[in-house]
Length: 322
Image (cartoon, rainbow, N blue to C red; front, side, top):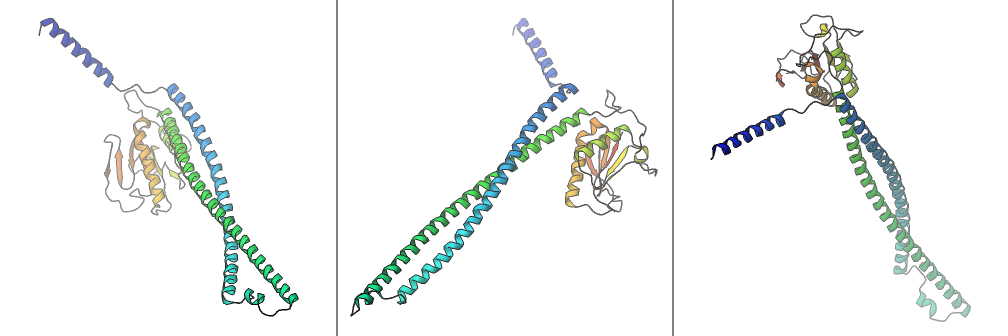
């Protein structure tokens, strides 16, 4: 290789490395203006999805009403069909066993002409009645079949609307979740330094918690239902953050009772959300179900048994902030 060619290769390699380093750098964090713009777009799409969900609900309600009416018509048609089927079977049995007047006997032997004519008229009348009964039965049978077909079609339509409703509901819920995440990004913990550390804060307000803890509490209240209350400040000096106004317990049951499966899942959701937002909101550690997660390690570890549902944090996630 010529020296000049070799030098060009070195320069190209250096430039390429520089570009790779530049590309490897983390993308700049979105500004509040960008986040608000993205949030506005998400809200617009959310409105469209909610409208689709609403229309799907209306269509489902109509299909449900139509399907019930079709089932009612089928039941009535089936009842009439069964009734006429019984009558036809009785008529067939009567003819087979000779219960009906014997038409051959009526037409033979010595008969008074007037009597013969009268009996012929009776036979004609009976035949006419049978024909009418058979025609009625055929119509009833056809009506029943149409009712069956309609009921099956309406049932299929109802099943389709159920599927569409569920699909549109999931889309709307997913969009709402994205909006929640975007709103979360708009909030920054007060007292955050450029180097990622947090300035200590004094408790304030009637609940005696710091502004940082107040923000975390507010966001959890807005995102999750916490029906059994939130306990934050307490004066007992137990070495934790509660007396400093830097901790809250989000209760999942009352009186130390073990929470239901649904409440335990809610606790997992709260703890998971806290993990995801810890660095941005200044959450220092989380305790839940006899485990602790610390922002320094970014991992859960098991804690020693403290002897009870509440002491082991099975009935509430505990969040402490810096």
